[in-house]
Length: 538
Image (cartoon, rainbow, N blue to C red; front, side):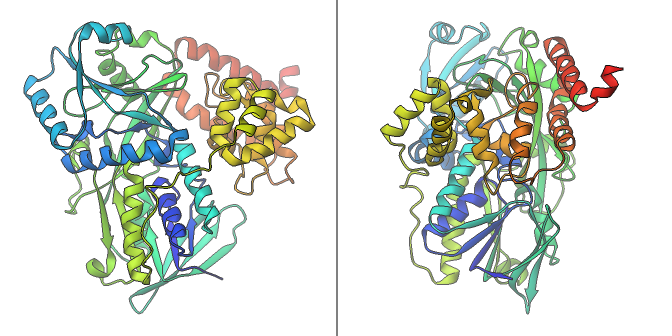
C-alpha cells in the first residue's frame, strides 16, 4: 500500500510532462506505465516538432498551440531537438486556392513563413523533384521522442516525482463516487500494487478509454494508426512537407543519418493494432515519390506504426479511415465529475507530441486547484536537463570519438560521468558496441544497470542500440553478455535474443527486398548460428 496525492496513468510525453509539472509544484505524484517509458505513441511517430503550419487551414487552434510550444521546447529541450527548419512545397497538381488559404492561416496563427525560389531550393535539396512551383520556409524542427520523455522523467525525479514501469493498472478504486486509488500489477513478477491517492490523471493515450472503462465511465478515444518508413540515409537536410491538405505520404523528416517518410491514417479497433503492412508501404512510396523521384531506389531499413489517440465530442465511430484526419489535433481535458459524477478523475486525450508540455500544464493547473496548491507552472522557463560542464565535455572527447561523445552526452546528460569513469578505469569499455548509433560498451553497461531497465528493448529506447542501418544484426549479440552480468535480472539469453530480434523483424518484414533482403539474410545467418549452433554444425 502506497500513498500519493496524485497517480498518473501513462508514461508517454504527456504523462511524464504532468509528473514533472506536479513535482515542480511540490505535489507528490506517482506515474504508472504498463511498459517502458515512451514505448507507445510518443516514440512511434515521425519525430516532427511542428511549427503549426501543417494545421494552419483546417485546425487553427492546433496551429497556434504548436508554434507557441515549438519556441518553448527549442529553449528548454535543445539537446532533444535538431532545428532543421522545414519547407512546404507546392507541386504542379496542388490546388493554388489551398495555398492562399494556407498563407492566410499561417499569418493568423503567427507562424513565420518565407518564400524562397525553386532554384535556391534545388541547390540546398538536390534530390527534391524539379516539378516544384513554390517553396515556403517554416520553423519546423525534429525531436527525439525517447530523449525528451526520459529528460522529463529525470527532471521529475529531481523534484521528488516517482514512476514505475511495467506496472499495468487493472482498475481504478471507486468509493462513494470518488476515486480513492488504483490497483496495478507488476508485469515482471506478478505482484499487486495498491496505491491510495486523491486524484487520478488518465493520460494513457490510446488506452485511455480502457482505464475509464474500469469503473464504467465511457470515454470516446479513436485509435488512428499511422505507418511510416525509415530510410538508411539523410535524403533531405530539412523537413519537407507537401503544400496541400494533410494526407498520406506527404512529409519527409530527417533524423541524424536517416529519413522518415510518413504517414498513413487508418482507424483501428485497439492500440495493439500497430503492425505496418506491405500495402501501406507501397502507398507511401508511390505518394512520396512525387516529391523525391526514384524514391523506391533508396534503401528502406524498416517500417513502423503508431496509434494516435484522437477524441471527438460525439460518440459516433467513423466509418472510413480518412475521417481520422478530420478529427482536430487539439487536446481535450475531461473532468469526470462534471461529465460522469466521478470526483477525483481527469482524462487528457488528443493533442500532439509538440504540445505535450502545454497539455501537462493545463492538467496540472486543474490538479493543483483541486488540491488547493497555488504554486504556478514553471515548466516553460526551466531547462529539462542541467547544463553539462565543460570539464565533462572535454573528458568525453578525450575518451570517445567526438561524434560518439556528443551523442552519449545528449542521451545520458548528468549520468554521463558514470560512463566516463568506466572508460577511464578500463579503456576497452570505450569501444563502440553499436557502430551505427555510436553506443559504447560502457554506456550499455550503465543503462543495463539502471533500475528501470529490464530487457534489450529498454536499452534500445535509452541508447538507440539496434536502431541503425544494421537493425541490430551485429550489436544485439554483443550486448547479451553485458545484460547477463546485471544481477541475473534478465531472462535466459536465448529467449531475450529471440524477443528482441522478433521486434526488429516486425518492421523489416514489410520492406523485405533489395539491399534490405540481403542484409536480413546476413542477420538470419548470424543468429541461426547463435541460437541453433548444434544444428548448424551438423
